[in-house]
Length: 171
Image (cartoon, rainbow, N blue to C red):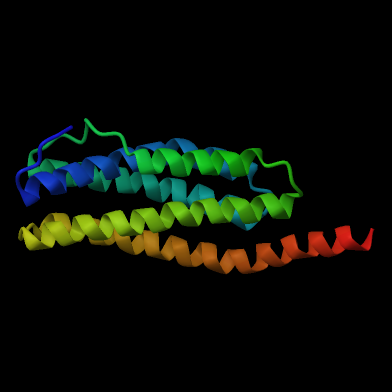
C-alpha cells in the first residue's frame, strides 16, 4: 500500500492511474472497432483511438510539468471496464445487439474517464497548477464529446437492436 501525504502526491497518483487507463484503452479500442458492425460505431472507435493517443501524450506533458514519471500504477477500474468490453466483443448475438452492448461498454469507460479527469483537474486547480489543469480540461472536454456522440449513436443502434426482437417475435 502506498503512502500519500500531500494533495500533489494524490494528483500524481491519479495521473498515473489515468495514464495506465488510457494506455489500456489504446490496446482495447482497435478490438472494439473490429467487433462493431455499424460503420459509424466502428469509425467512432477508430476516431477515439486517435484521440486517446493524444490523451496519453497530454498526460505525459503533465508529468513533465510536474517533474514526475507516469509509470508505477495499474488502473484496476479500467482493467475491469476493458474486460466488460471484451465480453461485448465476444457476445454471441445479432450484430445490432452486439453493437448496442459495445456502446454500453464504451459509455461506461467514458463515464469513468470523465469522473477521473474531473477529479484530477480539481486537484490541479486547487494546487494552482493551471498548465496541468488546462491539459486535463482539454481531455475532459473530448471525453464529454465522445460520450455525447455515443449517446446519439445509441439511439439509432438501439432501434436496430429492437427491430431484431420484433423480427424474432414474428418467426
